[in-house]
Length: 134
Image (cartoon, rainbow, N blue to C red; front, side, top):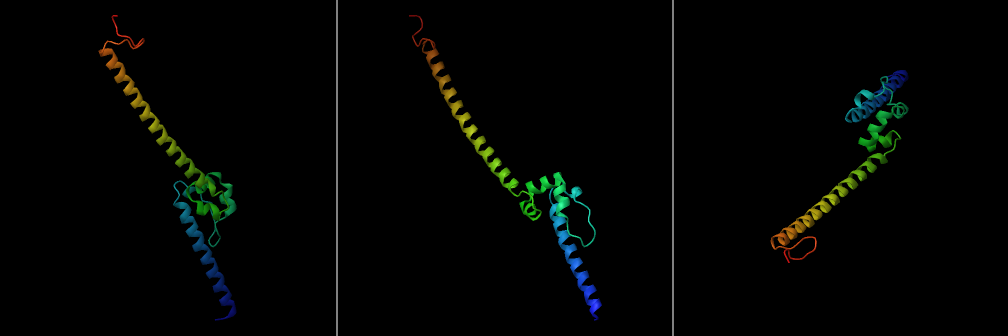
């Protein structure tokens, strides 16, 4: 094979490798719900443009929240997913805490109701604590 054909072949192989890598990145982005139609157009053999990705605010937000690996690759804020996970965990802990407080208050209310009913049936005035009719 001549040197010219070798250069052409190596150039074609490089373009094919870039295209394969770009398609893999596009496939990873398409896995994110709602991101497929936001992908910027590109020509065969060109890599996915990080500048065009960063220019699209909606696509940036989707990538940051759903794929920290892609966010790092494109130079976006990968901490968004971690912060959202921490917020979710905090909300869950607060929800559990409120459930426990609600259950405790319900028990206290039930006990107070039982005490009032017992006192009423025993003839004790709930306001004064004295027996009624004396």
